[in-house]
Image 1 (cartoon, helix red, strand yellow):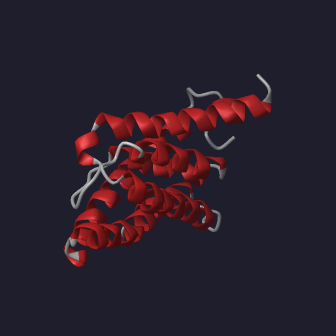
Image 2 (cartoon, one colour):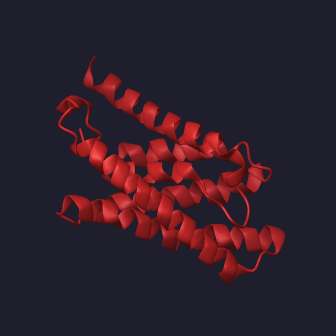
Image 3 (cartoon, rainbow, N blue to C red):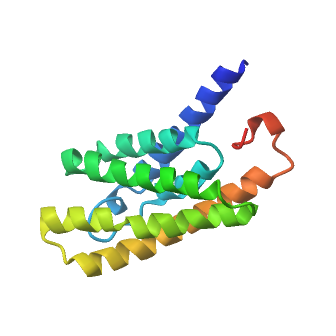
Length: 166
């Protein structure tokens, strides 16, 4: 398998992982209190910039299933691009492996103001209460993803060419 094919395959697998996890718990993905398990995949973005796009594409696909698809396709997908892009850029400044992964839950949680604003504008949801709930659930899912994908990437059982960072 040539490098370009391997790179595209990795991107497709990451996007598909987001979609599968997103569709698995569909009722919990949308609304004022969300627990989108697929947000775990955001952590992968620190390994390579190609995953910024892969995760964002996965999010876009999941948002097609939203009751507010037109709004979620913009706000939700843009929010994921901010989380993954921001995490990738900030992680480049950090030398420590686990420190790189630790930025994902922080950036993810902080960025949820975009979704809280969306829910306020569309449904009239109380901004600060909504933001607090989204902040907590996003932090949890991204932290879980940082640990899971961090351990997978560190696994000696995965050949180097198949590592996310390559």
